[in-house]
Length: 136
Image 1: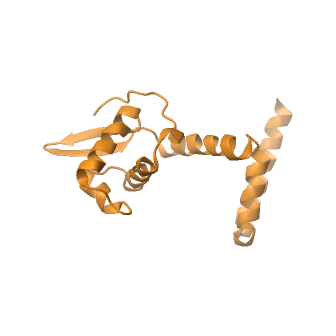
Image 2: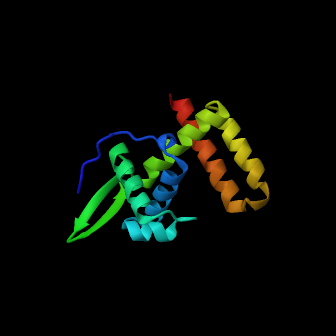
């Protein structure tokens, strides 16, 4: 297994196809080039995917596992880290860093799909955040 070269990759650095490849690999957990190709929309050639995977390795997003003659690739970053990186970028880029704008937009978009359980959990999260603020 190879070490990640770039210690803190940022998802905003990715092209559309690179993001698609990362989405496939996160979904599968670990994948070979043919597996990635079979899950991509409008799949490019295997050689093209192989080149893009190499770039993703160089950028620090993927690591490689070699078993015999089979090469497989897996994310260098846990999904929770990737979510945070992507969300940080989204919040900064589209909402000017405003947490309340993000939350209110999500609630507006999903207001008809929120269950009582969702609402209860959101209230618990808000209560916990308020308690943390009071403690500081």
